[in-house]
Image (cartoon, rainbow over all chains, first blue to last red; front, side, top):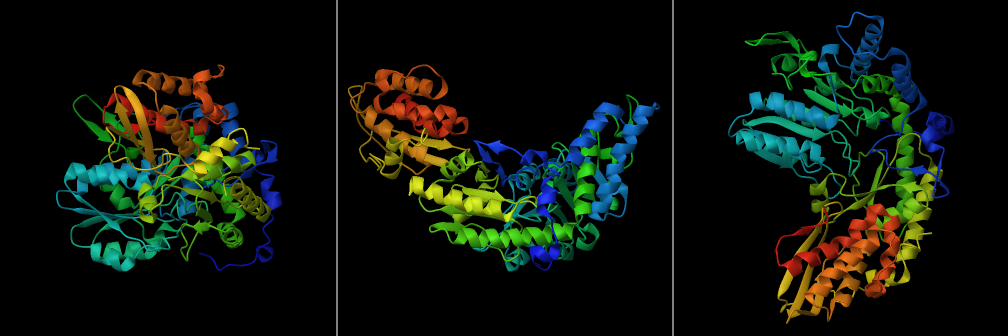
Length: 415
Length: 145
């Protein structure tokens, strides 16, 4: 994480940034909307909305192979995003960028394609105790099919991975380690560089679920030496239904296709099909073209804003919000890692998160309540659910004040 | 602000749930589970000659689900199995339609506000799904899904 600097020093003009997000300018139940659910999906700036609209109004055609003008335009616009994603991740080549529906599909692609080819009976896959269901279930399914074993890196009370325990899990049968860069339920920023190095030392590969990292920090897959890295467009201020899977070229080349269909082939006869080159080998069927173009605009937007500035400003918000909430009697933060992204997950004694969420909603404040698709995390902390306020760079300290006031009201109702 | 949902009776029953204990000599039991929020509930009934003599529950949930279970156990006492099954339907109608509340619901009409909060209907119905399972004796975990 970047060195914390003050908001003034970073010169982050949040009011100007908020002008870019039309959805934020509305009232909910007669109160100004306070959107604190960006970890579920981030709001979209005008540039993303406009890019999608322009595609449908002006350039709409199917991509690849069309010789007419519109098809060439749409192909160019869609493929331009591949270049943007390559730069966003600092990948070596455009062919290492595969378009998927989102992080979930990115992980499933690797589990299905690489996993089926490379995992066999007695092999081991390692995940962590704080994974989202999407980075648990695909590996469980693979392990079940192959009679392989799923191992889980435990965490401490703060919600940090215990690397000494991870070391003990690694061995000659470890084939792959799949860990989230940032925990959606806890906000923990995991030391993925170290996690990857340790995996490589025993000859295993590493996949990083970057869904919660991409909106908040600069990602460099080369520096991390990640074998696979995947994120979703909609969490990084783009549309839903589009995301990226990065994979090292030599791994992708050796992997079998994921789905069969159009676009992923070179030649087809009834006797034999030869497959297209990467990345197209993994992209069967007409993709989410508008989504891809919208995601390109989103990547430009956050890059122009500057991920280092975003991280510094969000850190200020996190520190402010943490202090504010810690003054509320009976409130316990869930996830207090020393390295943390802007997620405030908490429980309040004797008050169920769903009741908290309903009362806050009536005050115009959108938070998420529940298990955040991380039931094992809830089980570990011995709670059924938490209330989670997740922040983005368009949030303000006064919105956090509104959250704290809202929680005091909650305590009045249920106290 | 949220008084239409969290009426005084609901808050009272959520903070001081009635019949909130295990029942060792129950002859009908069922477990309920709401996978959306992770809430779990155990329901105990003592049914004699087709009449519910006693009802109790264990488990913690949100204010709506706890109050619903508490008020449900109160309202069941003395009801025949048929009457209890009819009450389930009437309660469900109260939560999901605009039709005037049945007089048989008694105190349970305090849940009428839930219909304006679609995301919370399943909180209110968890205990009732569990009741149906207990009365029908299926022994399966009742879920709201």
